[in-house]
Image 1 (cartoon, rainbow, N blue to C red):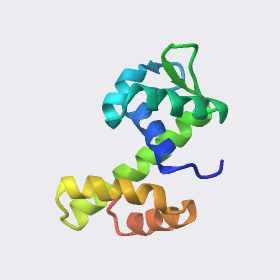
Image 2: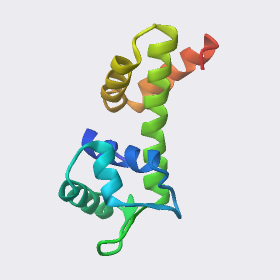
Image 3: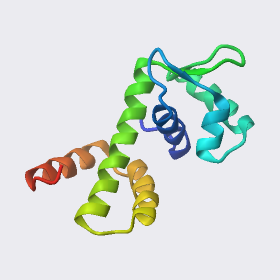
Length: 127
């Protein structure tokens, strides 16, 4: 799948973090609270994610990730966690700054570059 906007990746990541997976759902209001956005913003984003086949949501119902949406959301979350760990543990960056910067970088780095970085970190025994 092609790379999506930072905003849409954030929605998928938030759904995964809230426990949403294939077969389990989350409420729009919980996604709104997690991301600090309005419920209307969530509904608009979910509509676009539905069009891409990444989530399912019956009319005004709870949000469920499709297989592809779950895979994409987990990938974004894994990137965030790995970057956060590296920043805090290997570089000693304070957690609040590391979290913000990991969120920025998780969206910007290409899949190819991230995999090369992941392999390098693993070769150092830091993974």
